[in-house]
Amino acid sequence: LDVAAADHAVFLDSCFHHCRSWGDIAGRLASGEELQTQPEAFLMWWRGLATGGSIKRSLRWEHGCPASSEGPCWDQSSCAQTVADLEFWKRTFSAEAGYRPQ
Image (cartoon, rainbow, N blue to C red):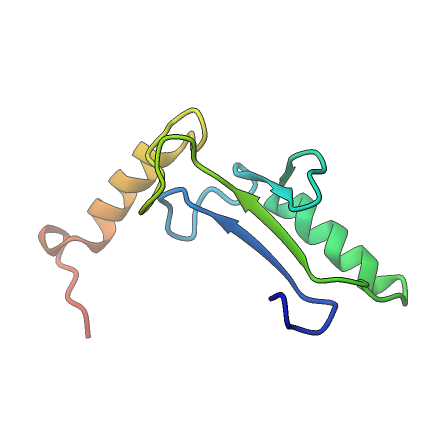
């Protein structure tokens, strides 16, 4: 992202989720601005493009996990839906649920 042209953005988080928790996870721009959820970050990026202007730099929001430096974050104070997301994933994608990778 650092070498990409402007107008690009990314929202990184370390919570365990699979296509869930949209809007529940907040991150901070590298410049240290206030926390924003994924939809708020997307809106900020989109409005910058839609106004006919250009985002002058690539935007990168990060959501860190205080309890983990590797792998997904299991800390419920940072990632409130982790347990529910894991249970959903198990019910949907486990061998017991009949899931077979193709």
